[in-house]
Image 1: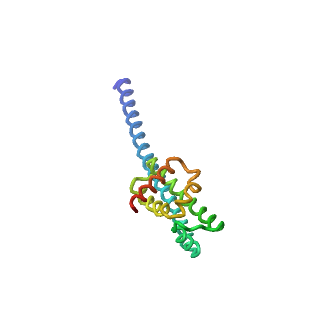
Image 2: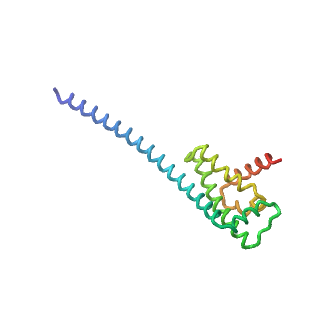
Image 3: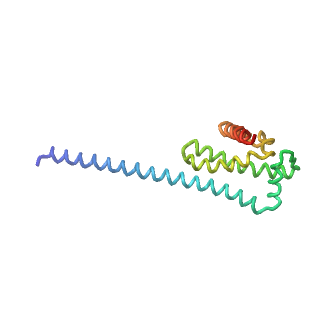
Length: 158
């Protein structure tokens, strides 16, 4: 065997090794991306769950949330602060979920199930009256989405 043939075989084996390595790395990156997405989604669900636990564990706050459904409800300053704090925490989570959906981190089904909670929250009387205060600071895309959901849901109620 001459050296040219040995060199050609070695180059072929080396090229095959590079191709196999690249395929392996691509597969691992895809797996890692999926794992990261799932972890981010799970963290989001955990945050939403924490807010729910806070609400469920406080009888007075649950009563306040029920009152806030009334379009005529006017909270006092302490109630207003509590409501704004919890609503902002929830809206941050929904805004984050909305961004994750737009980026493709979560799929349409996952976003749809989260958006049902958002729909329930934005349709109470106090939120609709306070939306300008609550929505300030969120991305314009998210603000537009919330406004479109309010319009769509109000259309269903008529």
